[in-house]
Length: 392
Image 1 (tube, rainbow, N blue to C red):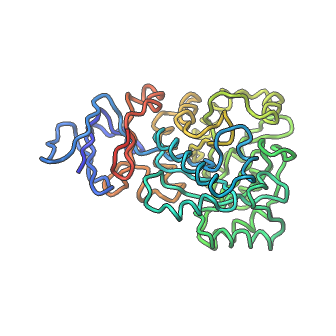
Image 2: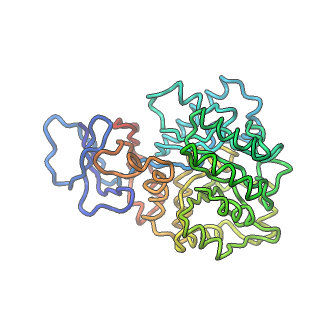
Image 3: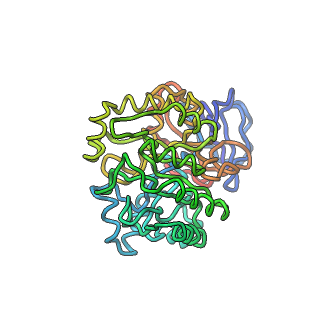
């Protein structure tokens, strides 16, 4: 048994009054007690007197095959199997060292992440939730990942293939993206009818669907088709950003999980995105405020980084994405929940991850300081606990 003694416990939803000791055993959380509790004889103790313990973070949007370098997604087509394994193992290591104990991979090439996961069951790495290659139009956004499909029949086959390969969810590229030349971030790739085919087929197979959607039009179509989540959700139009109130209301009413993929190292965005930001006049600071306003409107927000796609969006920057929400005006507890309890629910893991409570997996993050008064404390990682075992 291991006792972790800290100054403060965030249980995934709130700071627990008076709590200061978390007991672990057999890879599970078995209790939360005050700092004055008697520690049983023979129990190991991990003392972190200035620290906050919280559930291990969940990055709800990563690309484990992307190595955070220039052209990371474009180079995937040239990877051999050994290259895939090497990059996946390194990106998992980086995520774990930053306090991320679960990742949701939303785009690999030809099921490489799923294949790696199946060969490494029980490895001391973050839990992987995976979509396989995203479904996209011929020559569409991220077509080099092997997920091209057009027309209802092909789309049904694409979903069935993913279900047979053991994916945890389906991702579809409802619009183009900045990282694929020739695709548009202000136009949809699929109409509402095609999106609805994918949603119906996936739901029949017991799978959720999340849609990559930058433009307002694609967001509208994705909502109408019944998707469970929307990635990026930037509300782009040809003339700028339009956070249409009726669309925001639908997102809130239907509790569609929105992952705005904040968090970066401040490097210059891709030229296409730079041009759209210039046209719209929307700064990064204003976007943070708009995203926080979505939460105020009742939209279900989950934190993810798009980790790995370029040097400005490397793996391991989830703490920055959470900080972006706080800087935009979101309450720290809500921002932390977006990467713990809420993210766990969205990833289908809420029954065992994302909260510090008895019976849940002993995946924890211990940081130096108080993230409620200084959100940068999330970057001061003291110890990561995975399956009950501490990693410093």
